[in-house]
Amino acid sequence: MAYYRPIAMTDPYRPDTAHALAGGWCWFTHAQRLERGQPSRLVSASDIPDDILHRLTAQRAPIAGLDMGAPKIMGILNVTPDSFSDGGLFNAPDAALIQARKMVSDGADILDVGGESTRPGAATVDVDQEIARTVLVIAAILADASTPISIDTRKARVAQAALAAGASLVNDVSAFTFDPGMARVTAQTGAPCCLMHAQGDPATMQDAPTYDDVTLDVYDFLETRILSAEAAGIRRDQIIVDPGIGFGKTQDHNLTLLKNLSIFHGLGCAILLGASRKRFIGTLGNAPDVRDRMPGSVAIALHGIRQGMQILRVHDTLATRQAMSLHMAVN
Image (cartoon, rainbow, N blue to C red; front, top):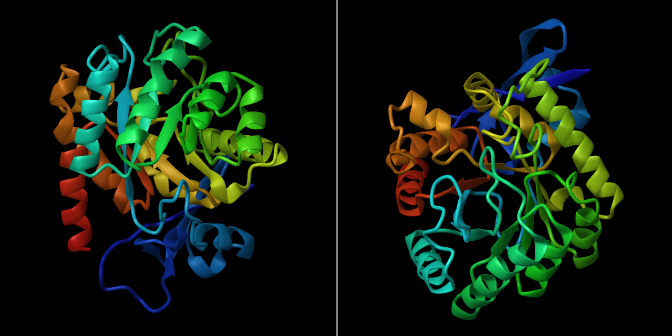
């Protein structure tokens, strides 16, 4: 099986023969052709099979009321006591609402509310406790503003309660593998979803992650999960994929995936990049304290934009919005 990674460009001097990448702001004329066990090679876009070229170029449909033709910012709101970056800061409803208002004011297009930490080594949270942490916060945010809300959960009952409270999107770091009821709940409500790759569960995922080829292994996993979601009744154009930076990956795995991000456009879905404040940013950027990782996080976010990522999941909303606005203005 051949895979094609479009060589994404943003230069304003665009050839007439260039193809729009996912109908968005990037373009390409060539791609890297990859095949397991074979050396890769550069090919012209005209050499890409028609079905794959269509997936790479087709304009992505709106999701949760958001236009995927321009990059969007997803603000992270962890209402947990133990998330790796902001645990304990916003788990009180009043503090969560204040932070939600700030992120919206700073430029967030959608807020991702999570009631269970999925940091390395984290334990599973009881369903009722996760519902209690998230649903009141979602209702309070929506009573205050019309910003779309994503529920970050692996559990069907939590997703169902959040959607009933007004959430617009289901973001599952297990890609519907942790709770088999997730696909059914999402399909029945007609909600869009985000399916993320993770090797193992949060408690063990960083013990010794291994891959034959991390880029192609993650690609194949996501393709399989998309097909499963489609079989449950969820349309592909309402599925977002996330390669899962930091979830069961070493630093080298993360860097390889980041260098090859544009390959995931071949899945025909919008793509979410969630690398904000991750450990590899601290390691490479000499920032052991997670709250010192904003500059590195923004650098990775801008790299994602240059690779056509439609959604950036971030902690530092204002800094990311400012950088993104300037980047888009000069490209």
